[in-house]
Image 1 (cartoon, one colour):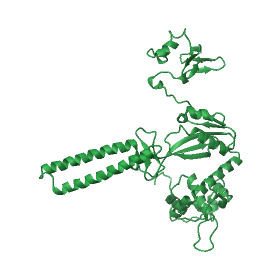
Image 2 (image 1 turned 60 degrees about the vertical axis):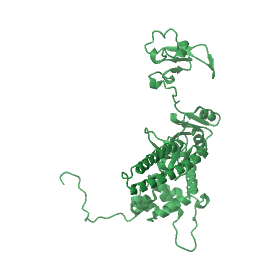
Image 3 (image 1 turned 180 degrees about the vertical axis):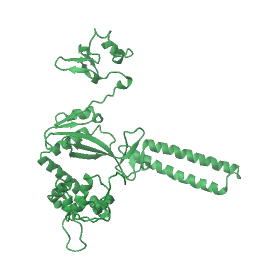
Image 4 (image 1 turned 45 degrees about the vertical axis):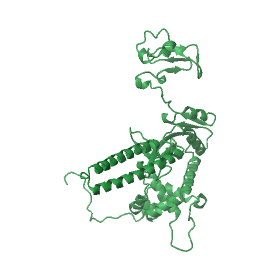
Length: 398
């Protein structure tokens, strides 16, 4: 083996600790999971079969299955089949469940039959975190993530998708009909068997066209112009990659920035975050139990109407303002490049010149204060990036 680190011989005898408890350290998260679940009243939370039946086959305790489910959540093992394997080989799961290894069907049925009760248990965990003063900052960070649904993209229909598929079906039918017309004129070119196959394809395409016409009616009747056949609640959403997208859900999560605990969450089928500032801020405020909560978000949540609704509700949004002017893409300065001095009530431009307030001008939005520096404008070397000559409105102001 040379100078490599050598392992022990597999045939060598060695002694293992006699207790499984010796394998689980005192600060292992599984001990927290057990202590938390053992303190819950599963019957009050709504778990089924929390009382064992007097007759029949013995069932698993819902507390055991809930421990297994939460262990999978904490360790990113969501699949019931993978949880079944972990229960058979993972020493932490063996300690947690008492060496019980439920099959994947039992785990999946427990999750399906006790969805509201599992949510209630999560709420109890939030209450516990609040009692332990883990949410002392009254500040949360909110962000959304796209989760893929079981619905295939081909099973999701929008107005654009149906229109494109109808065009494709029309083109295919026209091509097949042209082939049949040629077969009628030149019988020797196209065999009879192939003619029959083409006729069947045309019939199938016409059935598909009838199906697409039906989808058009359902899309017109839907609120958001989408229809998903496998998972009706799933929606087509764009992702960060160009030209990509998924059919799924938008999961909104509010996290405590100090202890990184999930304070609140929600699942929506809107592909953007612009309308989720107020709902998530309200959920976070109720979970923390504070009168005011600072909500940290990215620019994807910026919406003027949502920000106005937050006023007086105890939701204090903190986010970068989205630049919708398009000036940055053109190489021009944006408003964020100008530094405002509140004490002196003036701006400092990127060239270092001081812009003082001029007479307010009125437009359709009301009176607007304008800041300028008439003396520095002619000698400014970066004026082309500030107020291009082709924009007459800026020429009038400067």
